[in-house]
Amino acid sequence: MSVPAPSGAGAPPPLPPGPLNSAPVASAPSQSTALVPARFWPRYVAWSLDAALIAMATSLIGASHWRYQALAAKQAYAAMNARAAELMADSVLNDLDFGGFARQLMTDPAMHAAGLASTAALTSLIFGWIFLFALFGLIYEVGFVAFSPWQATPGKRVLGLRVTDMAGRRLSPGRAVLRYLGGGLSWLLLNLGHVIAMAKPEYRALHDRLAGARVLRDAQARMPLWAWAWVAVQVIVGFSATFWLMRAMQASMDAALAQTGAL
Image 1 (cartoon, rainbow, N blue to C red):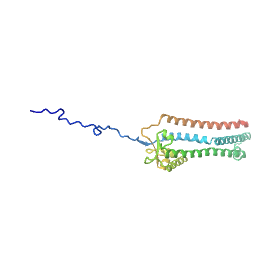
Image 2: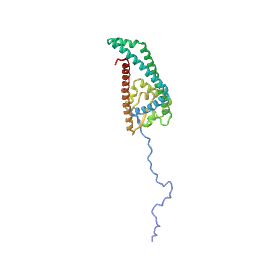
Image 3: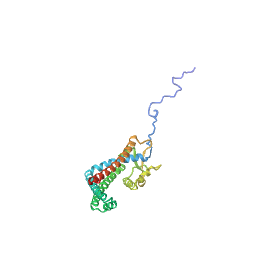
Image 4: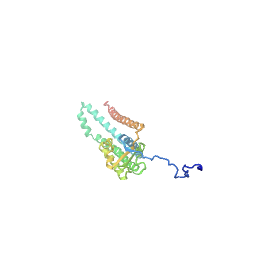
């Protein structure tokens, strides 16, 4: 006579609950965002944003000096125009003696003095402003690139760019200084050093190559619409400023001629 098996016989006994018997929850490993070399236009927009900030600081800090030099240059230029108009009127009265007019322009003492005053004022204004701009730019660039957690200036940060060495590490202060000074060399080469940042596949400008650096961006990032609008604004302002300057110079000369009665 067979004895019935106890209930549950043949099935494996249940395992006690515990961490060893809990099913592990699968989690995808975190992957860092892929970085690729930044191309020319995002780099240009970032630079122009930074340059606008530095230019505002330069203009505000030396505002009284810039105004004084600008006024001196304007007055000297007006004196040059007035004297040139007088000499032109004399040449018209002397049967259009334009050869004599040219000689007088070169030898006239009043014209020479006005030219020297205009040159001195413009030199102090333009080169003084550029020197202060470059000094602020050096502090700004090295401070943000070499010491901030962004590894980028605010302009580059907005565009999602960062500056690293060739191994992807933070750029040292010495290399950051060298990179900034190399940018000045590119300006002296009529921006040829900046244009080579268009060259594939590294998109490295001359100052990047000199400092052993590169500018990286998120592989999925695209330049936003506002950045293209910012470029368009700069083009419009540049053409408008050139046109205004030409008109202002012509108006100044016409006013000087009108005062002499030549017009």
